[in-house]
Image (cartoon, rainbow, N blue to C red; front, side):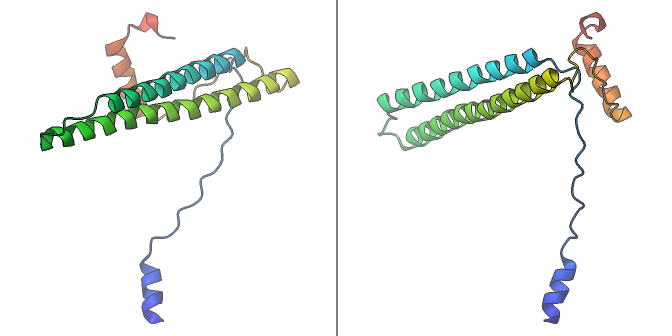
Length: 148
């Protein structure tokens, strides 16, 4: 029993639970959330269609069976292609569901008067080092007049 107590004492302590901080949805346009949901749905549908087409093509065109290394490389390439495209389809599908949920929540808030879509959003100030690095990167990529 002492060995168990000693083992338990060496375990890492539980970290504090994350504190929920509500997000201010004022300034979010309902149509923007709907447009995002439709866009991600289109991405998901396109990726899933691409997965189906690729799987059918791989079925019709089997790997060469006479060279062992070619057979193995072909199997890896097929797995990577189908895995990545289907993973993109799933991630964009879940994202579209979230965007539709945001659309429903923001629309409900606007209709009940809880949210104001025309109110400018307050941007949270991030860590100074991170924001300086981001500013430098944005300066290198885009002229200031192109940004908000």
